[in-house]
Image (cartoon, rainbow, N blue to C red; front, side, top):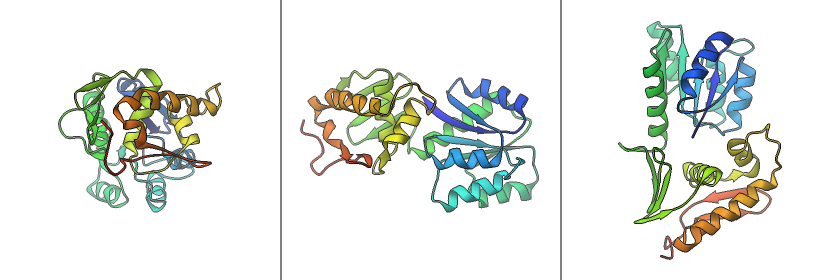
Length: 230
């Protein structure tokens, strides 16, 4: 499931957008620029839907601050500012797409989905493919070559997030916040438990070797030389 950061200071409009985007992902709402920057810096979101006219920090400042920190989470600017100059500045400051209010429900959903597919290098089908490992997001299935790997619930989400961040170190805190949510009642050790179980599911195909543990740091998903053992 997608994890979407929604930045909109109008609470009524924010709730309306929440209802729309909840069809395609989990939505976290924030209402000012400072909170938006804090959440964006955690790098646990697939896409950010960002208003420009915000209290404390405006959307352009948030966007520029994120890009300056080399955080390239896809950003859809959603704003009432419809002048050409505003759109040009939005893209120059690091925005990936620009949609003006009022907007059509279907268009918002399609633009968010398109942004995510583009950022993950998906072509056509809603699938994420790394080497011979394929995650089908529509059917919630995992395949390695011609073999189906039965992954349910959070193990599926865990593998997907690792694949989305191939070659990038992901901390336990990031995994916990992304999969379980920072307000979860469980503890950080749940990450190790699920990671161990995920590796057991992947081991028959040699794919468990693609997940490296970096002690006291986190995890790294990358294909070792020689790929899998199968």
